[in-house]
Length: 291
Image 1 (tube, rainbow, N blue to C red):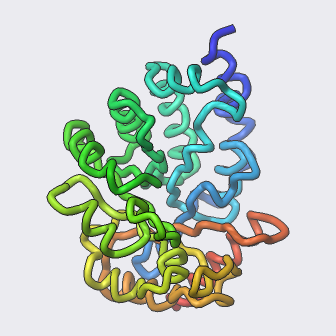
Image 2 (cartoon, rainbow, N blue to C red; image 1 turned 90 degrees about the vertical axis):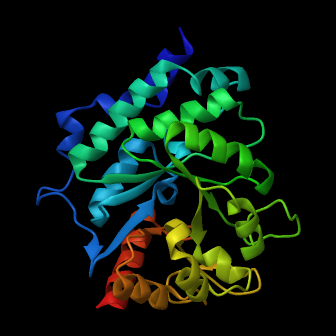
């Protein structure tokens, strides 16, 4: 049995369920989660506890029409050897799988706004370019990535060659200056690199004691997507929306009033009872903030 037959059975078998799977989606038309002009969606990592078909079902149940597709929902199953993963990252079969994924999401009325595919130093140029082609096959020119500052020049050149943009994702740990966490690290990565953008996580940014509203006001033209989570300052915990110190409402109001076309992606990370219920609560909080 080949690697791709294995992946097809374990990881992508549900993609071919056809009408049976589609019948589980909402019966009242396709979702529309643009609220007062603000595109609200989810990072599919929010539904990391289930395979891709079930994650799509959950997104539809919540009523979201935009997604940032987490690489864990499309990669080979855990336990696959590094050699086989490297083959998957460059195989034409992978692009066929991405066509199946795109059709499934399109049929459900959920737009894949960005592919979350984190390029690291161990990714060869061939693997990076193939990942960029995967994004295009999924219908997007945006890739969000947890990476490092020293990879910015290489990724910029490859993105320019492929005709896509790589948006770097920030975290709140900045002891290592090579990590994306501070405005200075963002500026360093983007300097002279037209195809490097930002995937600003306003929760992590707040936990690192920076001002997300001020940064968004100044650099909105460099931001591809926003991750929404609520955290306390000083590297505080992830909490349900409204219980932390992330300026969720001010950021949403800014997006609404300025009409900036930057999607607000819910990224559920705190400990709750059920991912669907928690993401739904987050969505309701955001709708009320925009009312």
